[in-house]
Image (cartoon, rainbow, N blue to C red; front, side):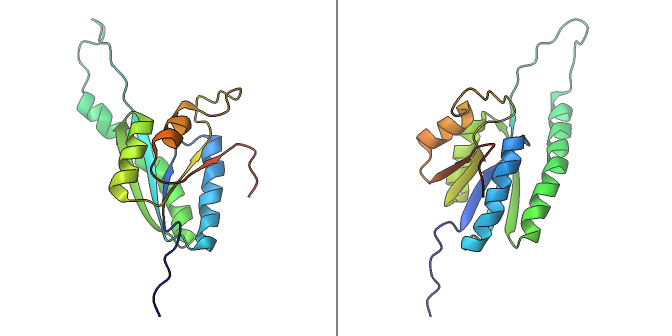
Length: 154
């Protein structure tokens, strides 16, 4: 018997650890019952420009970057574990750059079948219908995008 193709076999779950991202994680967990097999968990460290003053003439940016990635991996571990316990194969990625661009890059490279993300990130501008990252992903993604709002019910 041929194996049936699953619609949403591989999920991309970008997280910024916001309350809305935590809500989106609950939707990702539920997709397991629909045949999803794998989740790529992504956290994007937004690049910031450092302005050095005479007070702080040198900053070891490489060490700073390494420590930041290490901290993100610690924060991502409970997310990955929760998905693993649900029966998913889990891959964790940290990236540095513009969040929407990195999400779209990982979408292509990992060949995901759906992106599940929160409607708003840590900026939390509730009056906007969509956050800038989720809007950019919706506009440019080649795959379906499930945008989860804070008050969405499973």
